[in-house]
Image 1: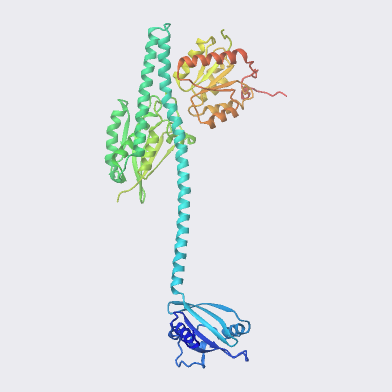
Image 2: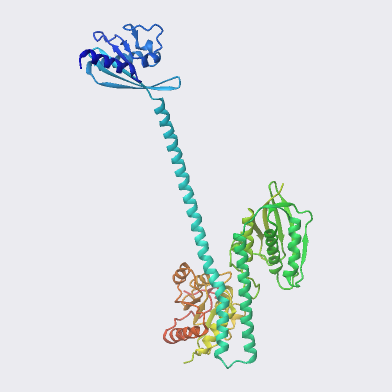
Length: 380
Length: 161
């Protein structure tokens, strides 16, 4: 390849480069001398803002006004031409585009300058940074959710554990009783007819108690699992329906019921709410001292967004230290003889109120009756 | 073998269970009437000799207590910890006779000084065998501790050195 052809190829290469290329001349005899542009390719010309483009006589700061700090650029060029090598000058932004500039020593007094458009690169980088930070945020959120979920599951597991223990205890007690009574009856001829009768009666009672416990457990499970669609429910209707069912549930036991008029409409579920109110009412008439006629009072108290329904009785009351316990499943404060029950009723009530998005609580002193309340969102 | 001066106190809230335990004890030769308490309060009343329990001829101090852990109000574990704080009663041998409980409760019962831990069997015949072993060991082989002669400290007056 002869020189002429080589030169032609170099020039073509120089002209067609997409990067802006410029050749600067530096008078190294004078350290104060600024580099001058002596050659540019078309890509560089496009960027050049020089009004009167004039090779040999054009300051870099004229061609690219505002891109460089003149003195520092001059010093960098002098250093390069003295020691050789190349230098990245960093990035410059112009009209929404970004340019990366590199200069390098060509000869003792010539400097090459490459200006490459890195806008796309920058955009991609920004996109990557955005994605990375989103990823980090997602990962952190995921971590948090995993931790929350783990805590929830642990709690559920513990609940399930104690649930299993309680179920096995409370369900096996009547089975054990039935089995033992039957064994005694089978093995023994020494008993009187009265004793035998009493034993058979105990077997029947145990079977009945077990049946009630299973029914209550099913009700508890239903209220925990069933799909509940929340809708406006009139507390007037709920309390009336519960009062009707209470007549059956009381089984002829005398009681008095005072219901305030004009109870509001709340967000809930009709059958679930009737069950809740009925359970509270049956509780209220159950736990009274012997000889006292139960008196139930029902009224509401409306706050801004919520409404509290109160069910007050004149019963034996609940000492403060037991007030949290009574809502737990299988918790019974009294012996079977004094106040029979399965220990599931209030657990059903609490679970139901939770499912309705409400709260439950009570105010009570021993011997002075109890005032249970449930708090539900008001319907507008 | 029969046991004549060996009062056992059964603390169980389940009257059927208490009945079985009593019956089984009678069948294996415990002639002394088995005493019972339905809950922690009643047991504390009995042991400290309050009210009608003052009559120690009718309600003698037990040599052994059979304790169910599942009690209303004061739990079995609570009763046990009360017992071990009473100077006159703290040595009373206590055998826990209960339905299965979580391991934590079992360990707690031992920490509070129960002397043995038994799980109620389902069958009455199994209960008979268990009670047979129990009385042979606790009323027969085992040497009982001395309980303080005076009833509970809070009912004593005056002071001694």
